[in-house]
Image (cartoon, rainbow, N blue to C red; front, side):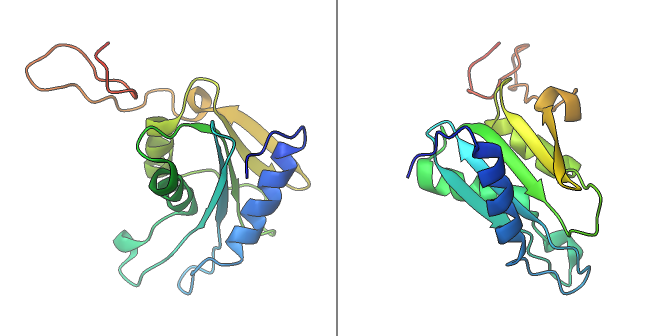
Amino acid sequence: MAYDSPNIKEILINKAKDASKNAYAPHSKFKVGAAVLTENGKIYTGCNVENASYGLTICAERNAIFSAVAHEGPHMRLKMIVVSTNPQVSLASSCGACRQVISEFASKDTRIIFPKEGDYIDVSLEEILPLQFVFVAPFTEKAVHKNNSPS
């Protein structure tokens, strides 16, 4: 089902909140859900999944993005992503690893939404990750950008 609705932010906020209910967070009790809208108009969700070996934990944002890639393929692009946490937390934004993964699939127009106390904060990738890592191909002076073409 493709989504093109004037209420898309609210739809994604609700889907992210629902996804957070499925989080596996026995160690931190910090449940997070994410919902992504792709440029194809499809919505995918994810939740955080913890592990006793914390380095093996995966965040909701990456789970949602990886699900989108699994369904749409490596050329999937993000239009919007919403990250929702425990209601008692006033605001929690994406970690650095998630911001970098978002950057792989985002455009300059991608919106990142963080619900906050009945409202939300709406930011661009540039605002939360102004100096993203860009791969420089070996033996060249040119950076390889998100679409895998040299600059």
